[in-house]
View 1 (cartoon, one colour):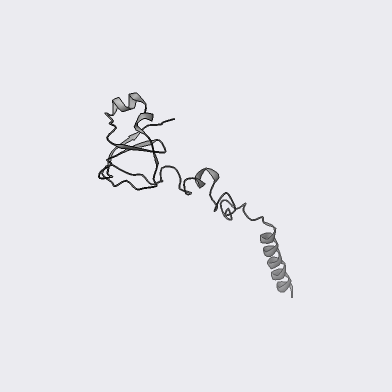
View 2 (tube, helix red, strand yellow):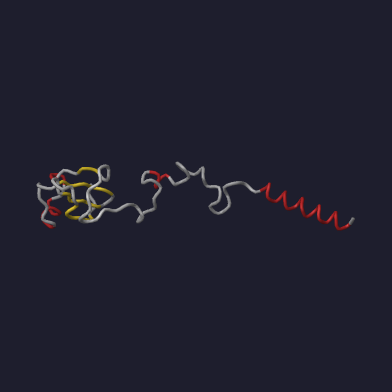
Length: 118
């Protein structure tokens, strides 16, 4: 009888401890309600991909429509145009601190420049 009471007391304590815990406070468990789809607001704009892991395009790859935004040649600062020998014969796209120089005929990336533009 004493063993039965001890087991019943241990079981009730085990269930009560789990019921008292608040969801979402368990070191990352239950964080689905945070932001849009469970990711922080800053990453929601980038498709919930952490910095450095976002998709990058490289020289020689075909330009993908919808990646980056068109940036007119006239808006690129003169010192960048001169330093990288840029020409108005190419199309320029800007995404997250990177300028992509794209050949308009083949749509291949001719040059990738890391530069912040305003």
